[in-house]
Structures are given as C-alpha cells and as structure tokens.
Length: 267
Ligand code: AMP
Image (cartoon, rainbow, N blue to C red; front, side, top):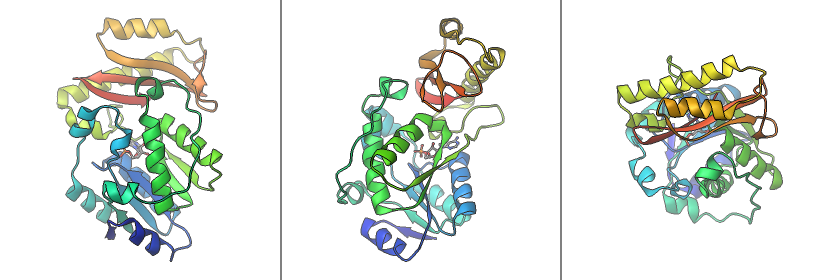
C-alpha cells in the first residue's frame, strides 16, 4: 500500500491505471468503512481510499472538534485490507486543487438539509475536489448516509460526470445499531440505549408495513420514552420524498440523540 499526501502526486500515479475504485472517508475507520473497501476490492483491480476530515461539511464546530481520529489505526486497517493507494491530504492540498466550475443540485429541505443547512454544500465542495484528484469510474458510498448518496448522485448527474455510485449496505452491530464513527464517543450504556431506539423504530416499521405512516403516533411514542430526536420521516427511496405509506419502497429516517451525541440512521 502506498500512502500519498499530495493531490498532484496521486493524480499522476492514477493516470497509469485504466480504472480503479474509490472509497472516500473521514477516517476513524470501522466495520462500515471496511465493508465499502472490501466491496471495492472485489470489483476493481485497484482500490483508492481517502481519509480527509472535511471541515466544510460540519455545521457545528464542537462536532468537528470532537470527531474521533486515529490515523495510525486507519493506516493499519487499510494495509490489512490490501488497499493499493491511501490518500491522506491536508486541507490545503484538497481545497487549493483547481477544479472546473460546477452546478449545485437542488437539495430538498428535508432530513439533514433541514436540521444541518449547509452540510451538503460542504459535502459537494469536497466531492468536487476529490473526484477531480481521484477521477475514479466507481465511487463506494454507504446507505447509512442515504441522503448523502442522493445529493452526490444528483450532483454527478447534473454535472454530466460518468462516475457511478456503488451503494453499500449499512453494517450494524449484532444489536441492530448502525456502526458509526460518532459511536466511538458513546459508552456501553449509550450504545445500548442507541440500539434500543433503533430496535423500537424497526419494530414500529414491522408492525405498520403497508399501512399509512402515523408520524404523530411514532413521535408521541418517542416522546413518551424521552427520546430526543430532530426528525423521524418515512421516505420513498426512489423519489426521495416523504411518503404517506410504509412499504418496501420506503425507509424510516431518523436523527436522534444519545448523551447529546447526534446519530442518524434509516430503517
Ligand atoms: P464517513 O467516514 O462517515 O464520511 O463515511 C465514509 C463512508 O462510509 C460513507 O459513504 C458512509 O456512508 C459509509 N459508512 C459509514 N458508516 C457505515 C456503515 N455502518 N455501514 C456502511 N457504510 C457506512
């Protein structure tokens, strides 16, 4: 595995290869990231992983400050997975890289865009830079951040790039909780409480399959359990809009808090 820190260097190296897959991350790698890397390894001869904690997508300074980071461990994980190139740029390397002017997609004011306005603008800014530096044909993204997939795929479409997004399943602990870098800030009790919330939503969904989504009832139930949340919405995955009925085409999207740590999931 070769570690590269300079944008021009990785770009030049990659010119030698016809195709390669790309897994962008913000580090603090866990089983979720590993599954993306494994999928990329299976589908491509060459796998490029980036680790870049993008400040532009953080709408809360404290959240950025407390975001976990363990670069040594990340490097050893990537080595053990036989990643070919690990790109670890500085802020300057990413943002001073010149890219063409691009169009922003329309971002619906639902879910994260409603509660963290500006977050996806920051995501698009970094993706625009990263795909110019690492112009892969396939980019591997996790369904845990489903709205992010939607926004990035709209961005890729309206800017007429031919990059394909490969969606990857959400990896969970045995207790149902989605694995997330922010989980590293929770103790065992916090992790248990988070899993209880997710299993509660899962059960609600199961009991209401093919029924009208009674958002008020679900919100009242969450309130009665003193669960703090920003939103709980039933979303049609194809159109990415709110849906009245719970069905196989919809998922329940939630942003909730455990010990003041904000977690998102879709079930
Ligand atoms: P992040 O480092 O949080 O920006 O995540 C990098 C990529 O890993 C994103 O495409 C995420 O959606 C994906 N990811 C994060 N957690 C998981 C998970 N538990 N299962 C699958 N993919 C994940």
